[in-house]
Length: 180
Image (cartoon, rainbow, N blue to C red):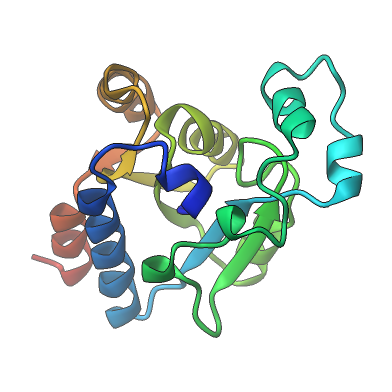
């Protein structure tokens, strides 16, 4: 989720994070697991719909960042969607918030989600909370998730997200789905 040029650039040493995300996607594809991609991007009408009361997104609207057709909003080439992948564009933090993601998952009979993304305090936290309320079984890949503030990442991974999701590494994910 949100593996986009304009977001990855906020992180120092993002190469390791990207490597883990690529590994997780590869593992999923080899096992025939449906892969999904979420990105944040805005059309003119989306900016106009953001009220000044929304602290985070009114700043985005004011700066016109992450325009839908800009290079900053594109998926990073290493984790770009392939044919058959679920792809949604959102205009708020959570992957479900302004998308039809729940409908697409339900239509495919998907009840388990393996999540990774940038940032832990944004899309990951919001998506875990919403998905838990929708009764999905959740896994968060700790080593394929990051936040610009490493301390916030650690607190969320160790103390918050683990209350609603299984927090595992990419290697543990590989073992889990291979039956090891």
